[in-house]
Image (tube, rainbow, N blue to C red; front, side, top):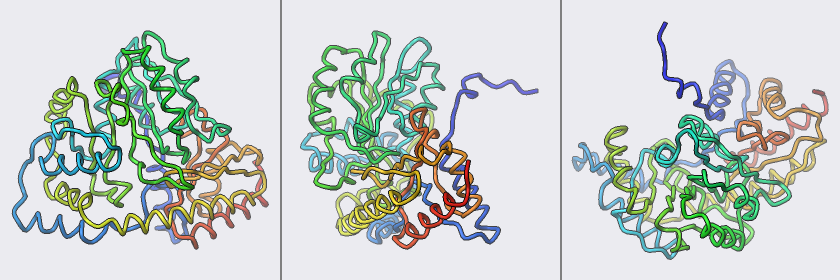
Amino acid sequence: MLTTIAAFDRLGEENAFAVLARATALAAQGRDIINLGIGQPDFKTPPHIVEAAVKALRDGHHGYTPANGLLPAREAVCRRTLAMTGAEVSPDNVMITPGGKPAMYAAITLFGEPGVDILYPDPGFPIYRSMIDYTGARAIPVPMREENGFAFSAEETLSLITPETRLLILNSPANPTGGITPRAEIEKLVAGLADHPQVAILSDEIYDVMTYDGESHTSLLAFPELRDRLIVLNGWSKTWAMTGWRLGWSIWPDSLIDLVRKLAVNCWSCVNAPAQWAGIAAIDGPQDAVDDMLVAFDRRRLLVTDLLNGLPGVSCIVPKGAFYAFPNISGTGWKAKPLATAILDDVGVALIGGPDFGEYGEGYLRVSCASSDENIEKAVSRMGEFLARRRP
């Protein structure tokens, strides 16, 4: 029998992909499936971005690129960062990655080892917890509470920091809840972190443009006092509907950037060249398609919230960011994951159970707004029919 390294037994998964596979299998059997589980825009990548990749191929960009990414791509990230946050960033501190997950992997493995603590949002993106467990570090959940709009509490977060804490992971706007942490709360956290200089911060800002109701995203780059221990994760997947391109970026302090470059050399060598030229076109080109997508997501989040609040035993606060709703289903009597499974099998609506995002996700489902108004209306109607007919 083969013997594997114990650390691999600690790896978790992102169950949205398992639900996608199950939904795809049911559809292949002829079932009418509506997928409100997967977290990707239902829009196509804008044509000018696709054409930039095609042009790059035709122009002969077929070889390796630097491990940290093409200089023009890193410079494009710097331009966007300045426009979005007001913070000047050197291209020497930018790492282009094959999606956002490599930045999580790099940051968490840099700081995680047995005997140390890493704080992460719960409910939160499941790969945070998975990678923390993989390193052997203690995973300390920071609760994202419905009564707080699924924003983190600076006071509670700071209270969880110990001398063993090495890394704090933040995410706003947030997956899976759609919560946004207000600037005032972020300012309190930053002030408190002055007492914990040993703690690095990984700020996942992948949904930065997706804010509604007059809310705005506050980047941790806006606080110069954190720059020497701040890692910012972002990318092209959500904003420009480029999930399948596997293209992300991250911004690192001087003390860490070369370590991450070495990790890239060992793990993925570099990001493919045509995708990087497409990424430049995305940042520098017209943003009409992005604006249209945000209008659609804004409309859909209000639609899905209104419909969900009409279901028996369900309540849902209005998400302020990203493209997810996170309804409370505790009034139905169901546990979240069995309910999500039963709804998919019975009425053909794919959803994600809240516990797939952490222990504080019990009692909730994640509903993606990345589908048409018609599909959302049909899906919630099917959920209502199911809840009226089935008991746990």
